[in-house]
Image 1: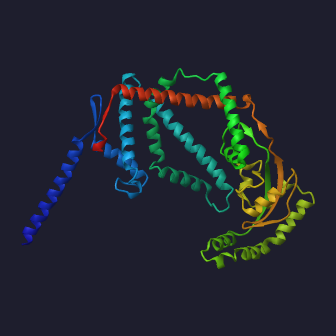
Image 2: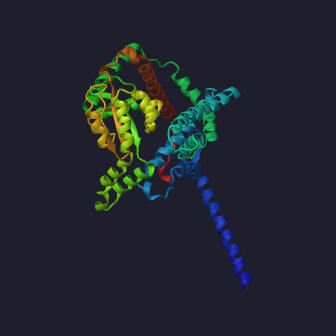
Image 3: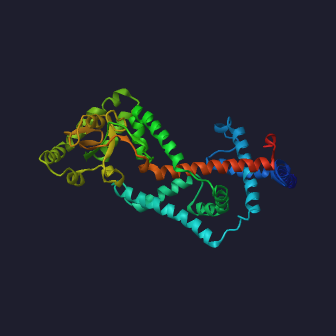
Length: 398
């Protein structure tokens, strides 16, 4: 009997393996797209599509993408077809040869990107007293960022090398694309008009665009820079207040203000002594450097101060209200208590309003327009090549 059971078990295992093999063979025989004399099988499709989904933590059976699955599949097979067309075109034009120098340059470009991000993060973490090892934290931050996309630094370098021929094709298609100064002037006028409408209606949009490095075509009235000296509560005290405010029990949450006042008393004497030095005409920058505990004020990105305006909701209410009360440059607040500690705030300078000149933005505008024009030209050419090949896509077999 035991021998029979073992034989049955072996037979079942063989059948299961055979079944798996048959599924694989079947998928390899199912053609989901034909591009000229080349085919894409269901096995090819599933290998790439499943790998893509796994980067985002999904499978084809995931309920979260059930409604979008058909569209996602259609988009992916369209991309596979396009890739096939471009591979053929690259070979046809003789752009598939890559030299060692080109490979080295592609890898170095990624390394330079990494080094730049790493250096910036290290400098940022050096201003954060809670970070013990800025270098390790910077490396960890980049690694975590890349892992979100299923990548490592080495894989990025490999991808960069793999894209060399594609980049050559892009350059080949767009080599004659240009932007004239007249075209740029027309676009400049459009950009100014759009910026006026956008920023005059919403100052926060201006602040956001400015801080994100967007080209500024128009600066609205009402924006100014502030700096502050923060006499901070301890991390434990700040976390305690935060926890109280987040408590589901409204009775408990209501005690947050009382607890904050209790904690503020522990630093009141120090805060008053610093305010006294400010009121006596002490150098605000020097006092901020000596006593201030806001890492942002030591960050190079905020060397001019925090950009704000009356009604700014980007700060805690007490801080924002105190900033709004500083109506002229050079005005300084008294002690302003918040969940972070005591602030002594100074309005540093008003941002001049008005339109940018064409010469101010000419280079960046023309570069942006050229990039957009090249992208459009390339997309149109790729679309034409795909139509020329006339691929046969069988979406019902995906």
